[in-house]
Image (cartoon, rainbow, N blue to C red; front, side):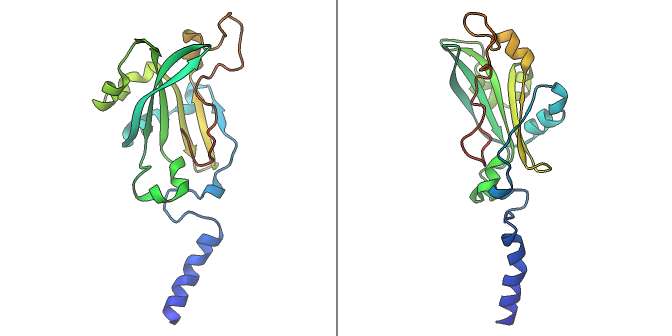
Length: 181
């Protein structure tokens, strides 16, 4: 009985502090609600490579309206989101999520599904519009947005050519604090 009590006492400080029970995963209470936004390519230095090195958890196209025109974006989610940490809610914020421009509905420029399935996601760097990740050092989710590609694609202006504050077509923030997608 004394040994069992000692084991329980040793595990209580981690739980009382709100820490995750899964190494490498934050507790939901440790994830700050504010996102950090980046547009400087230097901000994602090393993040792109880390994204490609991680195991792919999910990949597929999503349809998003951009100034009344439906566009397909390829989304690739990487990291061990469904493995050991899948039962810990804070684990869902780990890994990375990348979005790629595919083309307008009915006029696809690339077949994202095939490219991702063949392991050629690295060839899509020029189409990378957004990369998201969680940084355990500051407890925040980060979002890098490719302003050059957005400008080239006409996302920075509305259908009349006027600058628009809604130039980021992909949902800016997720509804859940433990989600990147």
